[in-house]
Amino acid sequence: MSGTARDIVFERRLAALLNGGRSDLLRGGRRGVEKESLRVTPDGRLAQTPHPAALGSALTSENITTDYSEALIELVTPTFTTTWELLQYLLDMHQFVYRHLGDELLWATSMPCRIERDEEIPIARYGKSHVGRMKSVYREGLGVRYGRMMQAISGVHFNYSFPTSFWPAYAEVLGTSDHGHEFVSARYFDLLRNYRRHGWLVLYLFGVSPVVCKSFLRGRPHNLPDLTAHTAYEPFATSLRMSDIGYRNRNQADLTVSVNSLAEYVRDLSRAISTPHAPYAALGVRAGADYRQLNANILQIENEYYSFIRPKRVARSGERPTQALQRAGVEYIEVRALDVSPFDPVGVNQNKLRFLEAFLALCLLKDSPPIADSEQHSVDHNHLTVARRGREPELTLWRDGREVPMRAWAHELLEDMRGLCDILDRGDAARPYSQALAVQSAKLDEIARTPSARLLVELANTGESFAELALRMSRQHKAYFLDMYPPNEERLAEFAAEARTSLKRQRAIEAADRGTFEEYLAQYFAA
Image 1 (cartoon, rainbow, N blue to C red):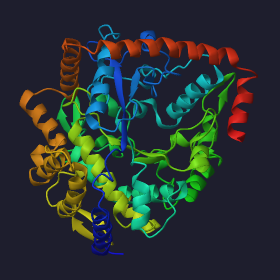
Image 2 (image 1 turned 60 degrees about the vertical axis):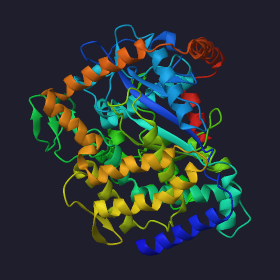
Image 3 (image 1 turned 45 degrees about the horizontal axis):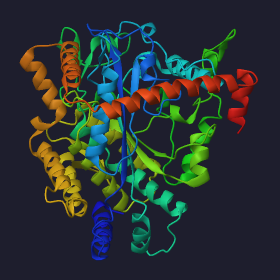
């Protein structure tokens, strides 16, 4: 089906929702954020200290954990029905963390810096329980397979679910009375396919990693020119983090996971975590009593598969992600393509999150036929092209088997979003969603407004290296949070109480362990 025909389908669906007399159908979706940041020393070196005990247990804390590295803090918000509440909670979390970092800083950008060797990146530790040890061994495996440097990249993940009340109305629009979890899952997979088709737009609008520290590239082949003596860049890049320089690593280049249906998605991931891979077997699973990786399969576990967007459901204890999806279907969507913005102290802002909410609605409502292998090739090409060359004048992308101007296509998508933003703005005189859309539209008309262009201009104006700029902004952010007055003492006390409780939960898990670690792994993978 051509792009024009798909637009007609979208317009009919949007009109049906508008004519149904429900102006609040899309309002009240639940949104949350996971924000990663490297802890660094005052001079910008990666912190070698343990995860601060005052922040709680990285294994069991509901709010503050670690990702790959002991130095890579991850802040996880609950879900909220308004964006301002979400951002306020994230701000309070930063205040709490900074009260317990001493002289350390949270690195203000996605791309790491001033790391000379992989060995300087400490792998996250989660205690002596079987589940804690499994999490650390998994990270050991990531380091062995892809190198620790790639795992030191940080990002912002946006989690979103549509309002429960939306699904019966949307089922009616599609001519069915069934709006159970199978229907909801199928519609979320519609969204996933269209995000694959159009997600390059997110990289153009929000990518803010056009430069990297040369230390990040040490020992790796690349063709990036020098910006300064210690900084390399791609002149028209938007997000090197989301390019083959960053997460799009060659090791997973041949791994294809379908989003044509939940069944195909689970099938492909299950196959990957159960199929031996000779190059990983050659690395060895164990070295004496020490594990180098969980196994020698294509993926150790499902989470190893990197994608721009994931279908998610909160898993029960001991349940794998694919098992959770099979049990009760898709609960929410996790958008993983956002760079940490150095221009926002918490790494993200309300305009960005409101735009993403409307963009996800667009991806849901647009017609979404299955993605064939030939189209997947174009999808991959478009994402990589925009990540590496998104601000290039006259850039073209592949659409329906032909090349089209990227900005013309982007304008079409943003124009389609106007009606959705009108729905989301109903009852709010400030029209925040339409305002967020206008901010993004301006970036298409003036490339200099994109955050990737702003970062390069900042570097040119100051003469700083990337490391110097990131360190300066990290210091500014720390001062911002510590000087903020009045602090939300009630919420800060809640964070402190949760930290203490999480340490008790970890000790309880460790005390309840039975059997050997090998038996625990066997049971986990046999389930």
